[in-house]
Length: 294
Image (cartoon, rainbow, N blue to C red; front, side, top):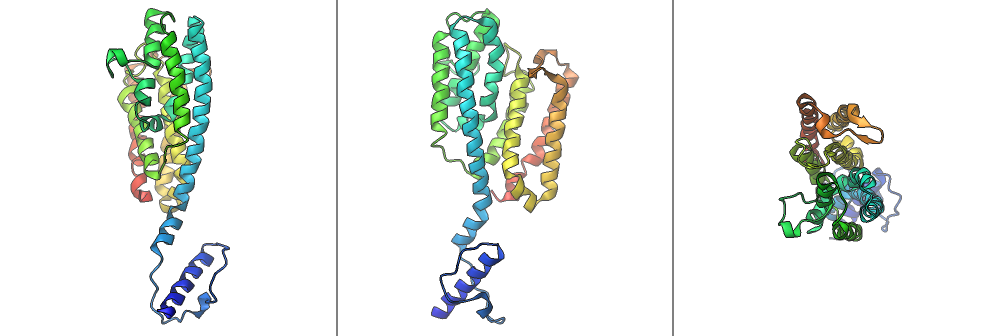
């Protein structure tokens, strides 16, 4: 038994040296002491799994930092938006509406994992009971359909409180690689199911802001996973990078200043091309999980 333990320790030490680890061995057995004819020792599956998952763990930590940064910016932007609404400044409220939402749209899969926060912040008319409807789209309807901020003070305060609650809760949520991969696909599904159709921003027609933010959020997930993906399937990584570039290029003609043109200004052919670009990106992106073993 002692001999078997020594051999296993030697093999484990050898693997550490091979991977460039500088950790000192706690035994006197050296890698060279393992006879060439000795049977291969069974690896420590726990240590091996931990080592294999280390890059993905690093990726999730990078993404967590990104989510917190976006949440901080979201709270600040929401405060400015709410101030404009409560002060009765219709024009400024309309101007701040879409840019504020972009911070949220980039990290929406995280909000969706936190109970009622997503419907409280982002429910559209008809998604929830009328008595429960609040958040951005309730205010959106008042700003563009009724063309007033009056009567929106309570909803504005609720929106700000919900944005702060989201910021607090992201500190506690457990983000794992599976959530990242699912989130990237969900963001593109959001684009194809409601942004391309113009359904999301049915009153303001600022769908392209949401569209771009969803794509940016999906790219961030790809970005943090890219080193590990390149190590396992460089061709897939290259394809996804290329499709993201094509998606960005497809959105470029519709930029206007720091934002985007109204979605209703696009022709049916233009929206079709955007939809095709989304589909072309979604297909290889959905293969990341299988390649990464998640």
